[in-house]
Image (cartoon, rainbow, N blue to C red; front, side):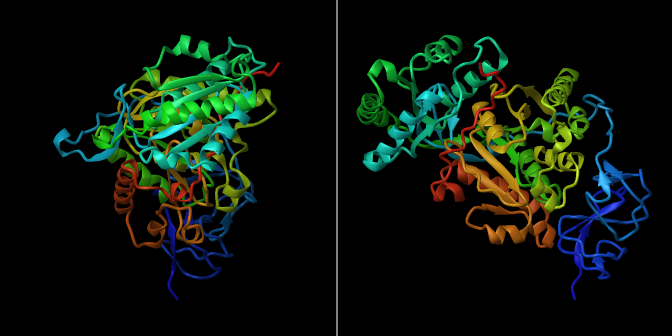
Length: 509
């Protein structure tokens, strides 16, 4: 019988991670210790005797403490491992370094849409955006009527029409950060290069007035943004009819003029996300994606890491890579904000992992965070920005966001991401419009079970058939293909119309 692989991730670790199911008393490849019980794939096995209260190490870092004595070969999980204090040696910028860039003449290209403001899109959608929930039905009706009437058949260069609706926009103070976040999120999509044109629909009396956004952010180029209000048009039906007329006669013809052209891969800005993670995510898919991100950044591209609660306990590894002490301290200030925020709501920042994560082998947020940050590769952290704030310049950036995937990615797209790479171990069906979402599986079993939704399988690393470097090459190649128009699995099935979820921290009054 062939041995199942187990992974010891650092010489100091006192656990290994099962690459597949470890059967009791059966030999394990990568460990001399025999399991004393059946251990599921992605879960941890003790390598030596661990006393109650002793730290448990994975990735060479503390992931928690033993709640009882643990014998070699035992399954290590929530029944005998709990959250513990973690280090705060932030050592700002000690590991920052200058990235060695690939010569411009040797950089790869993709077929993208160069917009009038110089930004580059990977898709050419027309967006129907809403300023307030009161106009959500109208926006959805417009998109439905376009599909029903097969209007897009006359405009082959347009990828589709997307109605981005949400549940807020009124009964809030217009002077606080929550309101500014909403406006940044909407405007970041209104000016997103993956939209050839945008129509913004409001009710007319809401707190989130469309003219206020234009006054704050500046008037966009002529013909790129079109404004309608329901009250001005005289109700739902008249607004839908007026918008359909403008779409057919004015907006779609202009958007249809866009054509793809060769652009350097440095124009890619990739949102990095993981969801439904398992114990193999931090061993296969995440580090392989991190290697691909390093290669992209070496070619002048950029990437956005997010989900502040899901770097908790691993933030010290990012501060060491910060471009400056100021950048590192800004990340720590976000961690402190989140600790205070959840405490005020009778919560705990360490309430993660979710039930599905635990079934996949993750026990504490420390363990999850250590695996999650490996998506960001090894380059210097160039900046830390607020939710939906524009990201500027090449390299790795961090955007503040919750750990809820649709909410986090909504902010990353608003910040300028024109492509998404989403790793998953339990399985995710996340699509996005206007941004294509490449989903990467951490294990082969789930990839085979959900192959209609998975774009790439990194589980081959755990299987022993590929290296991290080989998978990274496939990921980067797929990024470039998708950016140039090749559909993701989600796009091929038409998914992604309902993933716009702005983060709201405003008090509703």
